[in-house]
Length: 136
View 1: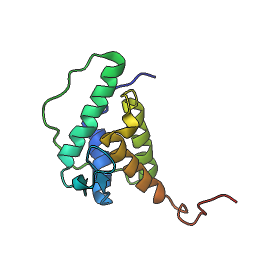
View 2: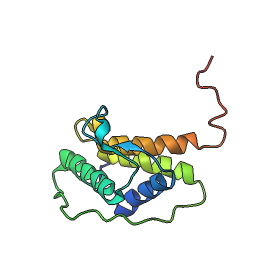
View 3: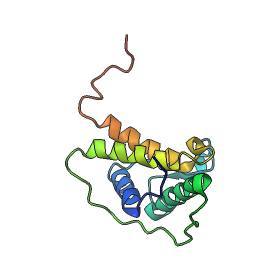
View 4: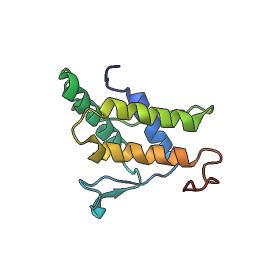
């Protein structure tokens, strides 16, 4: 399977869910940088981070996309009612697959955004919180 740049709709859907859940993500250069915390206040900025990271990752693999200098314009998406949490988890996994070619992707702001979204969706799955954390 080849890597590709996900659609703006894909990014908007992830950020619509994050906004609805009031997910907080560190957007500073490192995890220890507490000066740049966000409550997803600027969804267009975060969408641009996700899109440009995805483009950079695909270019690491194929070197065929120009970085889009047009500012990302966030638009709220209507999220599917059926299997919403599973769809969000799958969309996060899709984004990760498309962006993982980027060197140190797992240390990037884009990875932190997507990881927080996925974590919230997993935690909201029916029965998840009733389970023990450790298998004994």
